[in-house]
Amino acid sequence: MSLVSLSQTPKLSYGYKKMNRSRSGYRVFSANSTTACTELAKMITERLGVELGKSLVHQEPNTETRVDVKESVRGQDIFIIQTIPRDVNTAIMELLVMAYALKTSCAKNIIGVIPYFPYSKQCKMRKRGSIVCKLLASMLAKAGLTHIITMDLHQKEIQGFFSFPVDNLRASPFLIQYIQDEIPDYRNAVIVAKSPSAAKRAQSYAERLRLGLAVMHGEAHHSELDMADGRHSPPLSRTTIGHTGLELPCKTHNTATLMMAKEKPPITVVGDVGGRIAIIVDDIIDDVEDFVAAAEILKERGAYKIYIMATHGLLSADAPRLIEESAIDEVVVTNTVPHEVQKLQCPKIKTVDVSMILAEAIRRIHNGESMAYLFRNIALDD
Image 1: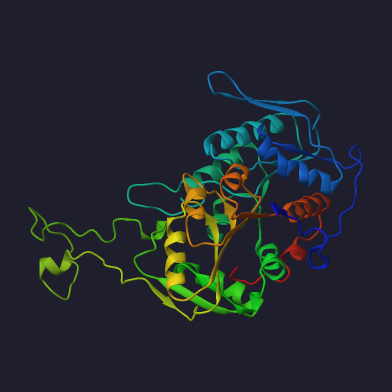
Image 2: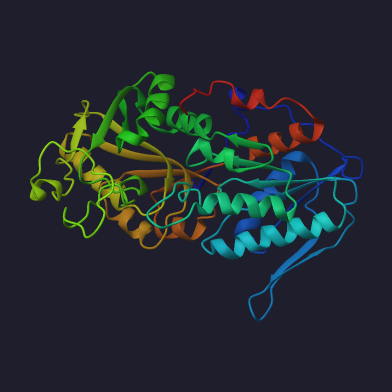
């Protein structure tokens, strides 16, 4: 089973209306020229009953991006679907150039459908760094976008970077349904957060599935939250030349104590996973070393099957090989990001289709309908 389609399930069957393309008042374009990236766009347009807009997106010999829109868009709502392949920066330029081309062609509204929002991990200030995610939000607004539809932002606070509306959809209903339909004896499972920062998401899954919860913490976890940002870097010496300024209070004057590095405790699993199916949930799976290490610990603690559930399967570098050689039994991701090559390298990778909810979001936005229906049965912490 390479693609799990959930379109016939009563719980998630949204009311689609076939629309005549000439009378619909909107167009759907793909901002990417590669076959793998246009597949999601074709699935969405088939559900909407419209044709994919005619455009040409290609790279010049000097790698400049060129976009040619082949039909009139004057006074219409335009939806640009952009999935992000491995060449992230090229995909961003394709989106920016197409949005600007549509803006100058007098489109009424330009809505970006960006299921995986790039640079979302760079949404906090780090040591002499920058908040790249905010920069990208400003660039999209300047290019002409008036609204975006995305899915499972890395941090929900990212929505505050935008000067226009953001609809942050959820993939959890589809992943939860996969657990219920495709994992035998899922009632004997426990939801696992591979770090304390992922505990809220795991708790949301556990409550809706009525399963137990386990949390891992310790030195095996290395995320962007653990990167140095300057707050734990005291000066090498307390002696200074000239004006000392404000001296911060401390409990001891022992310089060696002040310079002691922050040490993480050995990895610990809080919760019982012995004789259970362990299901690790997260929003992004990219570098899989942390997931592989977590799977080994869970196996040592008695879990007999280990699943990874994530919305965005970036699966960079040697991720397919590492998954195939690990204790992980299955990795389940959605089709927000193309990963067909990785699936050929690793049969453990499975895909859940989320084109249904993206198509319904497009239909509702164009018709001016409420989006609240798409967030039913979604926990606040999800």
